[in-house]
Image 1 (tube, rainbow, N blue to C red):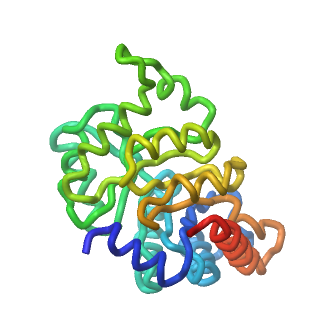
Image 2: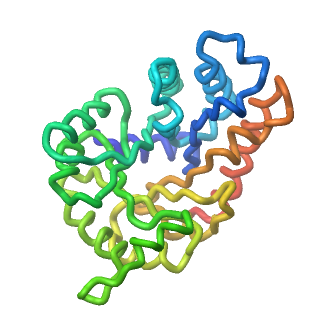
Length: 266
């Protein structure tokens, strides 16, 4: 089974399309966890215990783990999530040329899926695309305001760059393992991308702290029932002021988002 088949089964089993972003900012980890050998891992373990019944996937962002202790914490986190039956999507936005991108793609031996940056073209993504059992989410239309600086540029054909990316990604899907990252902060663009790539599952960020459109995220983000709507800070730091009860608050936030999104699912 490839990643999207496994993800489909996970979505059905927990009745959820929630992606929980595991971005353990060291400055926001509760003080009582600082005495642990790996505070980020201690934090993530408690978040996973509290949210796994509501999570279709966990999405750690590599930026929060890029130091020796961080990589150890990430390894423990991935193994623990897998032990709970939850796949892991690494938000790394990788891509490069030749042996460098082949090296990046080796992380797919550990995680189930990854985000990639298409700016350097297909050859920079080929080692990821060739991993038939892994999911590859191609950045298309991001939720940050500055995304418009490049993504909205009009090509000679008259289409914006993000639409070309969507069309190209559709042709790169020979192994049925390609998805798109499309933000929820502009519902009209989300709908446009869905029309261009009708069969690709979307990873839709921007629902939590960025205030994206939940209904549009579900309506246009899912392909044949498969897709992900992500919240990071809105879940894992929901109990930032709750002390030792922070994980319980995260579980409640994940359950609330699951219920909110399920109102719009078929």
